[in-house]
Image 1 (tube, rainbow, N blue to C red):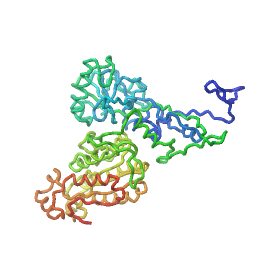
Image 2 (cartoon, rainbow, N blue to C red):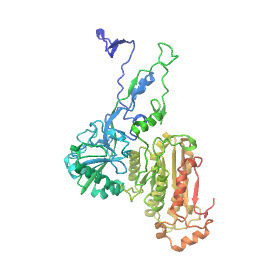
Image 3 (cartoon, rainbow, N blue to C red):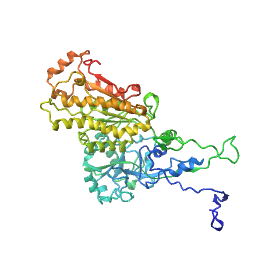
Image 4 (cartoon, rainbow, N blue to C red):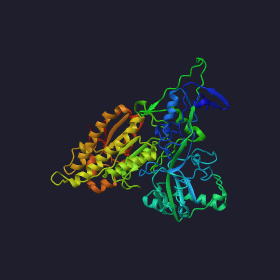
Length: 552
C-alpha cells in the first residue's frame, strides 16, 4: 500500500504504483461454506467445508456487484472427509498406515491413493487416465486392514473444527458405526452395499500389485504398496471435504465500444433458492464435468445398478433443473417385493436410488419419527438432494371397529402416513429450490373396492395418503413438484401370499377387466412413468394398477 503520512492513497501492483481516490481493499476469503456457490463452481459434486464456516463468498458477491469479473472459481484444495450428522463439520481422513486403498461407490479403485500432496488429495477424483476405467462415482470409500486401523487415528494428521478427539486406534469410531468392520472382503462388501465380487477383485488385484512391487494400473509408488490382510477389514465412507477455495475477483476489461473511463457492465447476479449466486452456475457445472475428462455418474446407488446418468434434467413442463448427474430417488419399503421392483425400475431409468427400509443397512424404522428424520438427512448428506420420493412402505394390521385399539392403530398410521409427511417436509424445500420434484405414494385400490371391515387401520391410512397427495399437489405445484398416487390391486407378492388364502387371488382376478395376475413390475412401471418427464402434466391423481378392478 502507498501510505504517505499514514493515509493510504494507492497500492503497488506488479511493481507499478496505482493511485486511487475512495478505493476499497477487499479481502474476499473463500466460498466453500455456501452450498449454492460450491455446487455452482467446484468440480467435485457434493462437498462439505472442513475449514472456517464463515467462508460463504460474501466478499465475492460484493466484488461482482462493484463490477468485478471472476477468476478461476473452480480452484480449491481439500481432503477426503467423513460426514456424520452427529457433528456440524466433516472429519478429514488420512492414514498413518500404508495398507489401505480408496474405492468408488462401486467398490473399484480409481487412483493412486498416495500420489498427491496432502492438500491436493481430491485431485484423484478429477484425474482421468484414458488407459484405465477410473471414472469414480461418489461416495468413495477408504478400505483398510487391522494394521492400518491400529497405526493411528484416521482424523488427527489433519485437523477438524469439531469438538471431538478421534480415538488412537479408531476403535471408538467402529463402536459409533462410523467405521464399518467385517470379516473378509465379502463381509465388508455387504456392509458397504457394494457387489462382493467387485470388492474382492479390487483388493486381490491391489495385493497382487503390492506383492509384485509395481502398480501397473495407477502407478502407486512401490514404497507405499503394502498388501492388505484380508482377514478382518474396515471401511469408512468419504466425500470431498473442501478446506479452501482460491477463486477471486479480477479486473473486468472494457469491451469494444465501452466508454473510456467507465467500467464494463457487470454480469447479472443469479439467484437460486433465494440466495445470491455468482456468474453462470449452470455453465460452471457443465465445465466441471468436462474438466479432466470427468463424466457424469454411470450407475445408481443403494445397491441398485442404473443406466447412464442424465445431466441437467428438466422438470415438469420443461422447466426446472435438477443439476448434473442422475436424479436421486428415495424409496421407502425398498426391501419388499413391490418396493424392490420400484427401485430396480427407477435405477433402470437412470436414477440414483437410495432405499429406506428396516431391512437395509442402516435400518430405518418408519414408525419412529427420529429415525425417519435422520434417514432423510442421510439421503441429503450422501446424495446432496432428493428429486423423487416414492413411499412404498406399508404396515398392514387387521382390525375392525369393535376389535381396534390404539396399539394397533398408531403404528399403522405412523408408517403409512406420518413417515411420508416427515420425508416430504425434509425433501420438498430442495425440490422447490431446484424447480423440480416428484412425490409418489403407493396406496391401495381397497380405498374404493369397497374395503373389508377388518382393514380399517390400513384403508384409513391409504385414504389419508390420497388426501395428503392432493393437498401437496395444490400447495407445491407452483414449485414444479408433482404429487401423485399409485393404487395397486391384489398383487402377487410373498407378503400377500402369506396373508391371503390362495382362492382370493383367483376370485379377484376373475373380477378384473384384464383377468391377469398382477405383478410388482406392474406397479413399478407406473411409478417409473410418474417419476419421468413424460408425466409432467400429471399431479393430484391416483392411477389404479389393478387390471381394471376399480374404474374411476
